[in-house]
Length: 421
Image 1 (cartoon, rainbow, N blue to C red):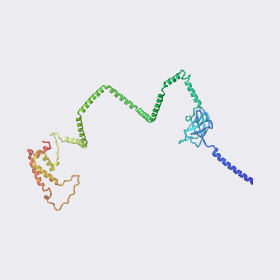
Image 2: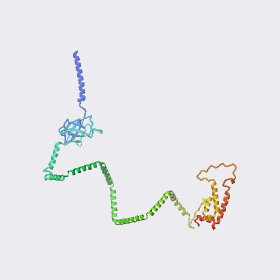
Image 3: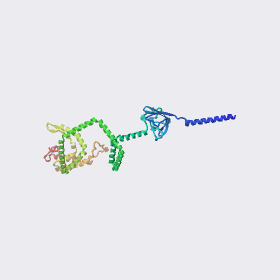
């Protein structure tokens, strides 16, 4: 019974220990999933199986295999699957110090875009290796040998160059320092104006491209310009004479303007007034220009070739207005002798002004007053009673004018209209 209980407890403890050990193994010692890639390097000095593969100095994988591959070395690597590497990443062998182990750096860090897939390969065009110390020593040795007694200084040329340089630089340290200082300022100025400089170069490139695209037109223009230059060169004597005469003429014009300044100023003012009138009457001028051709055509149609006269018909609508007749009679040469006529025309004008005005065609006539049942006596209407007497006096005055100053009225009126004929 006691043994059975102890066995049960031991079995339980063993089970718990196995579970804990499995959990620890899963989270601590279980290999993490990785994906494999490869890269070719010109050299792989210091790179071994187990060397680190890093991104930004953080270990993300290890080197699995290093194999010579023709003139290059192929390195196979495993990278943790949880790490994302750009599809176009580069592989660089990094030397942290002279004695430290080297590692492979994948760069740049992933931000966005395509990622590197398992089995991807990085070629020689995307890998780089550091310069080895022995290569630096060898380059320095080659340089010293080239400059030594068996090289450039075999005949003492380098020594002479150093001596001449020392002699030229002796005592010129401050000037050389100032030159370097000024050169630095010039470089800073160029750096500050690099945008304008590059813009100028860009515009110049566009100009040259446009000229290249219009090569035929440019050649034609140059040919025409050459022909014009040749023609001007052939006529340079005549051109010089013309310019000489022009200078004389300009001098004479200047003298004339100086001597006649007052008259020219008056003429300019008068011309300004004329132009102002023309501007103010431009509508009337426009109408005149529209009507003038028709009027000239009508004048041509009225010409009578048989009698050599212009046959026209005058419609004097004003003759129906007594005031027009009075004004016409008042313009006669002997109007001073027509005292009675003037008096009669004045009475006629006063009477007409008292009469109601007739509305124009485009005006609405006033409403007619209501007619009375009994028509008034005409003699009681203001102004009407005076009309018979005024009319009789007007007829008597017109009859007196039939023999005025020995010229009948029928001959006087056409004389006024026809210019005295």
